[in-house]
Length: 361
Image (cartoon, rainbow, N blue to C red):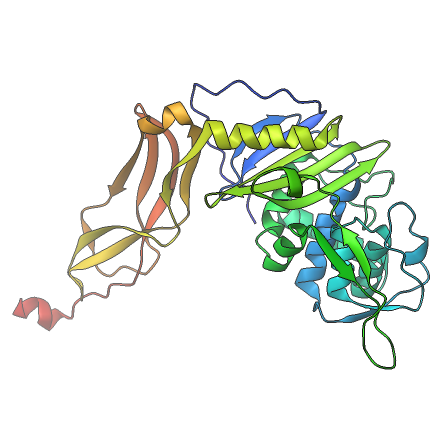
């Protein structure tokens, strides 16, 4: 997935919130646009926010109903665990809950060994996915974020990864859950019993209106870390803080900053019709023109009324034209200054008229 387009931020940016962090970023969930950043590209240990990628790989490569036999390494994971024991059998979906909700390190090792056949191969998959998402300043050494030399990410990369992961409905369900129960499967009956009740480590799910994810992390080197998301009136923001002294307060202040001071404008969705234009010598006299990409920009509230959408389309189209042919641009401007643009393309092919039809006309 390509990085979101970078747009020049208009003037009148509200004063930044007070934060107790080494690095932070706030992005618009729909577009990926950066609203606020501090040292967002600085490589730092991500602690258990690593588990976002672990869960993402599992969701894309396996079935939630798969039964996973716990090997001898997972129970020795250390740190926060859900108490897995060698030889137990768990549904993969419940191991994911155990990894994301109470931050079980043992669950991550079990997931990695099941899907990757060994944790090292699974970590390779994590790193490949990071590159494909544009998280170029990220490198994982393990599945759970336990301290390891050369295991690092950035606030911006973690926001990118979380933004992508939140599009997965099962991931979004798990990270928004306050509680869950995970239970081993009885080998002889496939019945689950002796369930363990687990509670989400993300306190914002109780305290912040609209909070719906995503993952905490803490180690001595990393400090307090949090990737947080919240949705209000259909608009989702994603905040990341690394080495914070008050991760829940810092993320709440970042999210408030975005919701209270910024608004999305110029919303045109991919495939949305923006014009119907005439075309010469075609089997149709007109052709629909649609946006090839999403056009939107997040701006300070005071700037919203000054944003205009300018549609530029070639008015002298001639058949034949293939579907997807670029014929113009939709441009967001502020006081005549271009802020962002997307291509406009034909929605369908238009064939050239047969010679006899032109003669008849």
